[in-house]
Length: 66
Image (tube, rainbow, N blue to C red; front, side, top):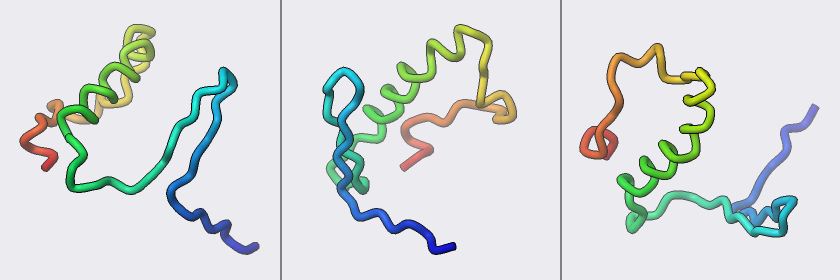
């Protein structure tokens, strides 16, 4: 079976019509903003008790992910 090749950027339209662009990270991208986005995105799941980071002993700080 051949692997499917994806070319970036990929533009996806959600069910409610919003366009989402998937692209490579750029030097101008903010790790602090991406970290905040991930925290907001996973909060509803964490509130339901789904904690995907339990095996990690500490949360990474924006300084440690650079």
